[in-house]
Image (cartoon, rainbow, N blue to C red; front, side):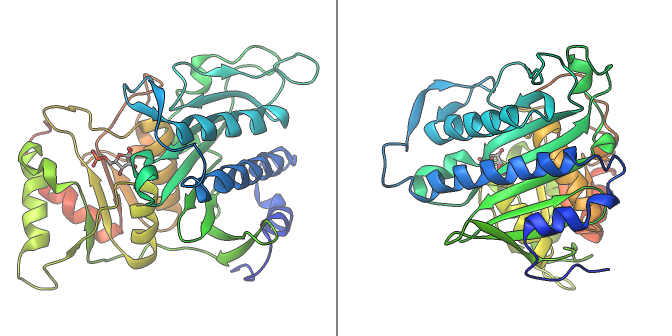
Length: 338
Ligand code: P6P
């Protein structure tokens, strides 16, 4: 049943609590804590040009990327909010070299969930006032409650996620998430700080005419990706398609889910495993894509079935409208995996 528009996020969580297998209320509290952190980050993102929060934080993260001040701010805001709510037993973040262990009120490790997060995706867009986002992925721990979390709690395949979502700080601020029962989008009314259900039961159109890829790297792409891009640009049938690339995965994904489209970040000689991180970018976006009727792979296998081996591992990523992803995979699979 499609939920009614204008339901608030809080009402929606309560109304759908029973849908969640472990309906102990903890996941609801977890989603609520993400909602709060998103408001805090949104407040800073929206006034980034006005305060000394732009520019480089003077440090680099584990990815070797310059940390923007808002990266650090967003990372701290989500970690602080998730820690204070005593629901998670561990957090892994793009901005943290290793995972963070969180103890409960009684100094025990008896919370049930781990959260993996890209606190500010697309941060290179911050200084030029282009939309950015937060991506989150939630799992139940696999190690015994009461014991300290281990890396095994984080290295779970994406098909074990219990929830995933993103916040997009764009012309409006939205939370889009799934708990495995479809995808719903909530838009923030900044005047009162409340999120309202604006996009119930979001679905990827099966077909689309938008392709999102950084064509500046074209010469370094695998042959199958080059062939697919030339297919998109050919004058036959319903083509040429339109090329749109924002430089923020959350923004390109969100537009493609609404209008129909495909996002591709392939491997290259420079980045043999691609650029995007499996655990806190590709797995959550793949879970959302599949829940919305779309598809996500590395060109050869389903993203959600990849067994992770490292916290910050990368993967080639193809995601979007079902028929477009299948077409791209067909081109890629004509060539041996590079
Ligand atoms: P490039 C942002 O850093 C990000 O992880 C995605 O959000 C975005 O789509 C991609 O990298 C942009 O990378 O190499 O095209 O600038």
